[in-house]
Image 1 (tube, helix red, strand yellow):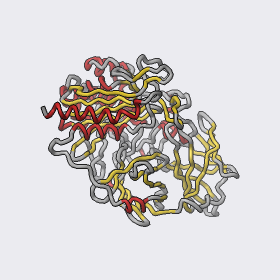
Image 2 (tube, rainbow, N blue to C red):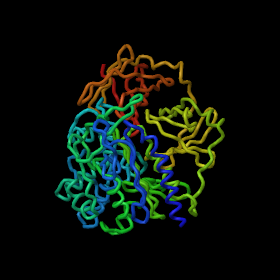
Image 3 (tube, rainbow, N blue to C red):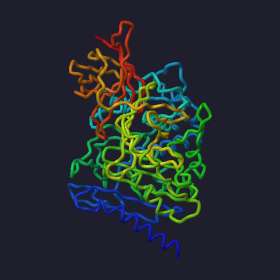
Image 4 (cartoon, rainbow, N blue to C red):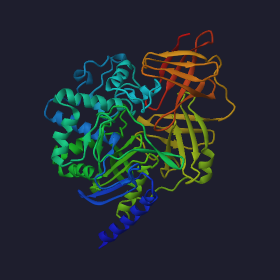
Length: 536
């Protein structure tokens, strides 16, 4: 009886969460709750196609983006079991056309799976070269960007930084070793045995896929179809649905594919070189929520968002997928999880936030004067919750219960210790940076900035005109003008438009002995310290 009452309460909670997308003319989302391998709840709201008025239904397919990564890792682990490769193999042993990296760095397949390779993110490299996700390009263009970038963000195994490059390369390794396309391997070894009939790899976004929802982005009071044209592979090329992902969740306990050891290998964490534990396992993020050990992954692509959230110790999962780019499915999935575990033993209450006065005093602009990173903090006008933005990417902050704030979601570690004029941010591998408050107004751009700056890693040049507008001469496209924003001293931001969200890059002017700006050091969220040398 208690389970029945709990089920009714869960259904009511999910119905309330669905209500905002039930209005006419709105895209929406679908959610499933899997308990003990059974899909015990599946609900949906909104339209799969605004043009045709088709509602989201139980079999609607969506682009699940980076949730693909765990399947790519599973393919690698299956091949490793057969002795056809080892996770300790150097990636260049399988892909010899990759360059030698600076310092002779050795990058293994396991480094790739754990996002600790140091390889720069290919999408970031493309964006810094002026190419947004809406620009048609080929896989070869992505590989060319990877090959040009011979410097690393850090030495392999020492830190974490999310990089789609890692998983595109893993997919190519599967193809080389298995002798067949990645999609064919996944279908034969995983999808068909599990009955995942509506899951497939679609490398081209132009490929027609029956039952696939259209992705939309908010535009004022309405919506626009989300443009996207980059090819997709082992990093994010799957389309799927809740029912199929429920079958994948069941496999973690049932072990139809790979035995139960496959799920254990995917979830197995490993330490960094300094002994601190990496929170990213193999295509899955290992976290804790309300005292529960959770594992899962998000997916983000223009117009599509996914959250695959597992609670292994409860044999429980929540799967939320949207074709509405304005929804926070990570937050929605956790609200559904809250309802699913309500009243169960061992579930901790949500931590209380710091006093509102403390949060209000955090609002403003902050600068890591040593590293050059910038950060904006504010309180959301509607909810009052603290928000942060780095490199243009907004994310919510949640209380940790000890006076600090942590990123509510995202494949990165970010824990903030409040202060009046300085705050501390702890990130991956225990790294701590001190950020100082800086004025958001009144700063000036570095003197002598106009000129042409070339970056060999990008095959691109940034051209700053006398009006301080930035134009990009990239390997695929010319872009601009883009806005430059002063921060403090030699540090400034370069603002670039984006399909997912506007981006900024933190830049620092580097001067020669004569005091002339000789170079720019530029960092993004997933590609750090790229050097642009002055050419004029």
